Length: 353
Image 1 (tube, rainbow, N blue to C red):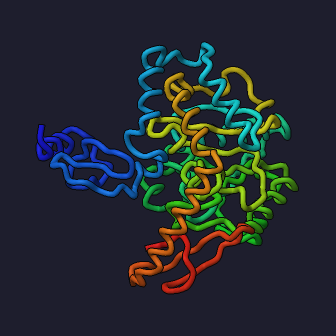
Image 2: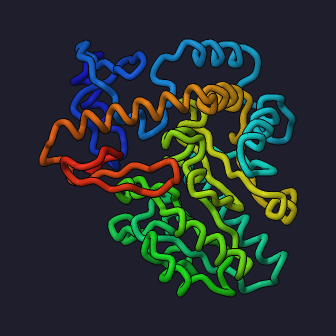
């Protein structure tokens, strides 16, 4: 089947919720993908921040083949070693005591919403259901996650959404203090906003959120679905801020292209959950968790993270050298985690075009 036929089939049979590029991708290697005509493309999209190890990584391919030949799916009524080992590894490399597995970032956020509501009810009784999120955030498209995503174009067709959600300006601690209170059960924030414009949370802002959550008995939830797993040059994007959350949502690059999500939680959250409180048929299957073990081990290696920082610095230097009018603003994090801004011709850092 040629590329034109594939595009025609997609337009006829697939629900049209994406504006697709006018070519058909057939294979890739490293950071290059190829279309049906053999034309190469430098893949800056990376599957929307998913392909952390690039395309056709030999080790990932080998692990997939080996595990697929042993056991692909069992459901969560049975134990498998890859799931238990991945949970152990995630906890060892983070603040968390336990992990809930799911299949996507939106599902990880949904789980965090449910866990926060349940834990607040157990600890404080009914009524403590408020959730605070921030303008510019993107937390997902399912109904609970969508309620935390203050985008009119996303929300308008699906109202009424989940109630008891309040929004505040990002990086405004005083505004956050006005909306976080005794009825708040959770505060959701991206340490680096993605769709909102690559906006890093200021360390003082995250520290203020931590203090407000502690004051009112609310759970601080970091959404690192897009900014986590090494993309910032640290394993977790919140590390430079020196703030520890109660929960953290992960997904995108965790299994190198296979669908997985994870909600990392402290024991204070996990201890309020019981059998039957949440679940998923496909979550944490042995194939995807075995691959995720390999991805996590490689991405968390100090040399890998140092290379991310090195390549990121090189990219910013080269973008700066372009002196392009299309590069509107950029920022980088210093060793202290502070955001240092530049505008055309100033200091190098992640850019907005």
